[in-house]
Image 1 (cartoon, rainbow, N blue to C red):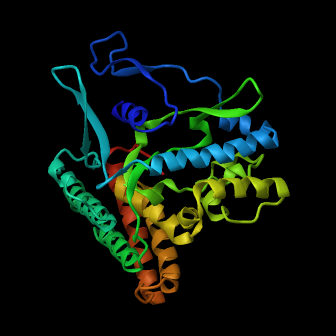
Image 2 (spheres, helix red, strand yellow; image 1 turned 135 degrees about the vertical axis):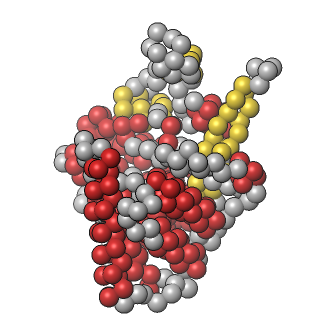
Length: 346
């Protein structure tokens, strides 16, 4: 709720307005709820495939403008927007660290956010917090050096100058066609009318919001491809098949600007997004361990090609690392099943 207020106050991005809310269970629903104004139009997921070319060009342009609006809202540190209402009825914004759930003992001091952080600082801090939480939650269940490996990756990325000139900005982490509404104006022009689902928005390194919207120029009738983030990322900079699709890609690139394009297209920044997601959510699922294994493999292949990076590990080291990840995945799943046999998270 705080983030929606913040976005409405600090950007021109169309977002729903809060009409009423109750954060207590003492209401007819017996749980917290928020009522928002309705955003006109339809979500892009359901209408984009049937749009004409001019409307698709409008989406390409306005999608880039949405991202630039986010990038323009900056901070000296990473974290989550929170807020309270004071005795005078004024809404006061605050910033807090990312949560490390479900660990009640993790209580980082909010004062940590009052000092300017570097990009590397936030990776190191998050992985240390998750490591401490894992040691408390699973002291005997599986090897605990996986987070140290990810910290090393962050340090190597920093040494390769990948974090130079990167700033903390507002980042909507679920900016997808299903969460963006569009409507047609009186003159038949198309307008993005609202952006929904800000619950996952954070202040983070700007590159985490640069997942390329390749669906704009590579929309497929195959829903699996449209929804597959890995497929969209890996094929984002492929040359589109038709002149019309090429024009859509050029339009988006013109809007975001040449300096930002490396964050959208270069493979090392795809890996930074994976690394940040792991720093944000920890390694509490099979999926997270599989992503870690893939990240370590891809980084070892890519690292020697980057200026300032350390030499690649030999094949035996990479194989040993992967074996450790596989073992940790199996042990973690067994530990979870021992606690709750019905839990089958992938």
